Length: 258
Ligand code: 48H
Image (cartoon, rainbow, N blue to C red):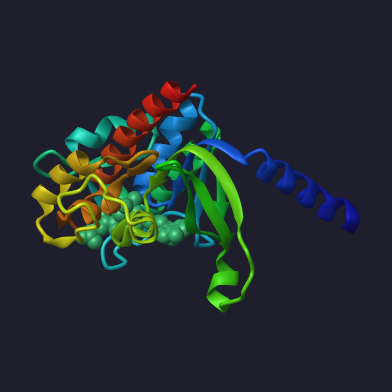
């Protein structure tokens, strides 16, 4: 029995990992924008893996606001909430309340159900960069990096890579710093996030969701971080709509490369 359990996990895990060595979409970061992107890309039939450095993907959504575990979603994003079958209740002025634990679990459920593969405890430490294009991710176990162990990484190739790493925009920073290239941002580099303006932050998140370098896309807080726009606090419609928009952009790019 013990051997069967261990063999089952080892065989199944390595089959899953081997199946992700060449992807259509590698999503770095399992916050709301990354998970929604994973859902729509998988639903469109693409081969998608989402990598998150934490044991529990979900990013900043589990905790609601200051650990009050509810979030606010505005009317424009409700088609996504409904498509993903998240329970919600109307609040004031065209907004809705969603339980943040239910929402995070629901997004993860729907993305994996649609066919996205999630690797947790994976940190993306670099990208594959060839002929002026981002073409994959370089991954290592989070505990290896936390311990500062000198262990080399593995590589997953991908037609598109999404930086959905939230406030830190880690992948965009790495690409600009290591390769000395200009990103499609106001300064050509990572501008950095501004202070709170909820309405403007929500609006600009969608505008800033785009391909910032051949093969490299940004969504969610990372989109505002690279382009230098506002934070918005615990309203999450912008994150959901950014995930849906970037999935459409990445899907078009994947199709073009086929
Ligand atoms: C693997 C990584 C790496 C890496 C980071 O921050 P997130 O929740 O991302 P978004 O942009 O989808 O959502 C932002 C939202 O949660 C938020 O913070 C809001 C709305 N704030 C407003 C405000 O005013 O503060 O998730 C990012 C995820 C996390 O789970 C990280 O663990 C993961 O990315 N991550 N995973 N490799 N190098 N870097």
